[in-house]
Length: 169
Image (cartoon, rainbow, N blue to C red; front, side, top):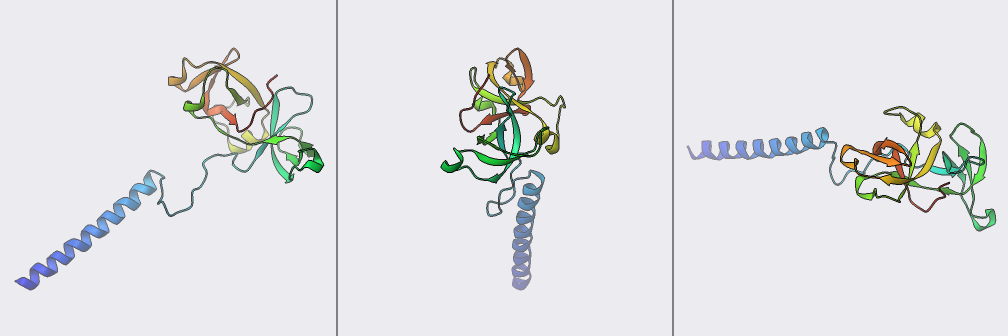
């Protein structure tokens, strides 16, 4: 009898340990959280890219990939491969950005807006689109996920925040 109780106790402990481990693994897979020891994968489609000023288009920027870093010898300009409509290599002042978060959005703040016209642009469209810098003019519909830039109402999912100050024309 004692042997049966010990065997049953061990079985239950193993079952609980397995179930708990599987449940947390399943939860991390379903909620896309992963474990704290696994490396983080960025969900930002433009992670690793920079923005470069587009000559002749005030307040406009293209997504670019740095081919030679900026230095004092290059007047702090980097050589970039322009991924926008113009394509090709060139020298430009560049900056990084990140997807807009509701907590960062306030009237007067600068944002970049992609004007592809697609409701859910893919990564290639995001890279090929000309992005324009705007000041936020109204956030009263922020609860809906929309704000105003100039006189246009836009979804915040189409906005990026520059990591440094940029020119808005």
